[in-house]
Image 1 (cartoon, one colour):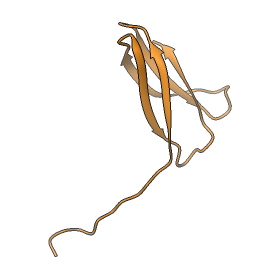
Image 2 (tube, rainbow, N blue to C red; image 1 turned 60 degrees about the horizontal axis):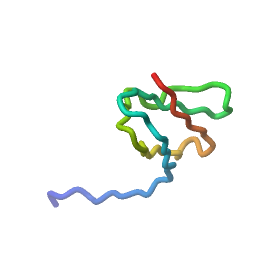
Image 3 (cartoon, rainbow, N blue to C red; image 1 turned 30 degrees about the vertical axis):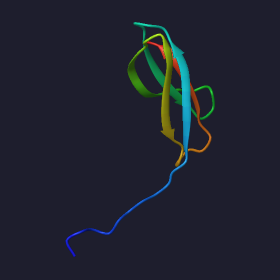
Length: 70
């Protein structure tokens, strides 16, 4: 009786990857129409390899992502 009921859920996500130069800061933006872009994440410091991020697409199944230098 002291343990709450277990809750689990499986959500749909997108895996976004991009190559990042060492010492360069990046931000990730998302868009529904490829015209208007909104900030998703900022302050990603490149280490000379691939950056991998997972983002939910539960409420917006059609969304485009891009990485830009800050």
